[in-house]
Length: 409
Image (tube, rainbow, N blue to C red; front, side):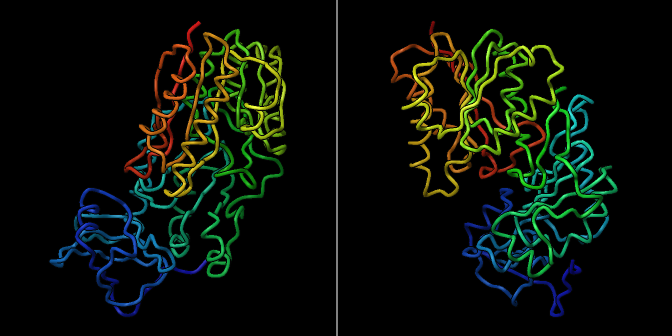
């Protein structure tokens, strides 16, 4: 890894447009290239950029990325401060302190750093037992890795640390820093996916090939709620991935659990997770089945007339950019409509969205509108958002939302 940049021509200084000034003062952590009015010189990847307003008053300091439209990710604001090793250490300790008391020995998988909302823009750190996974969403962190890695390994005891890279940043990491996705930066490569605990259940985390960092830790609280609702019910888990909701439902006393996913790799992971928990009587007694199929097609056109007492619909992001929001809302509507066709009277629908470009209001309104269109009365039980280890500190960070409905008997 290259050392942190040391520009020879002084601090990189940016002056920005009025709208961007207002956003930064309100705490927004991003500065886009189109918002820059003046720049004193070309900037290097990962160096610190100082941002000033029209009157040359200091606003913020952040990591500069000349290759991205998201040009600066803010680290500090208000007054100029030196970004030293001690500063990084204190910033890390702040993130860890926010999670003190959240988890006991029954949960050893959780998020330690949640990007911008913890003051580490474009950086995520997850823990799976003794394995850490560092996910980077911008190559601007490349020059800083030699500074922050020793601090992470010192503060969070572990047997290994795995690096995961976003698709957009991977080419730059390869060429500029000789780093690869799924590279083990500390410790030995895992012979098998690491095993961790969540609410006393055992799960494997596919830290080398799995989505995100290997497991969707953000749905933990919703999985616990599904467990509470599942006793005596036939449960359908749509977009089941590696069976998180399924295992909680089985432990909660579900009569049966069916998993629906198009990925055989994901379904195989779910089978292994059930095997890991086979000693628990409710899980061993639960009837299980899997369907490998397209969820949209199966809900509407296949599967016969089987009905369920609880259906979880938790698709991947359906709007990766703002222009995809209308099609995403239409897709959510189609999924909810298909799920309701298979829901027994008195049954529960649990519908989730992880699309940041679809707001809470838009998603909840879509689900309730489709439910109302079906003619059967329903009760909206609750809505949920981010768990405490995944805080959302600004609008664009509010990606996760979930709604619980109960249809009339």
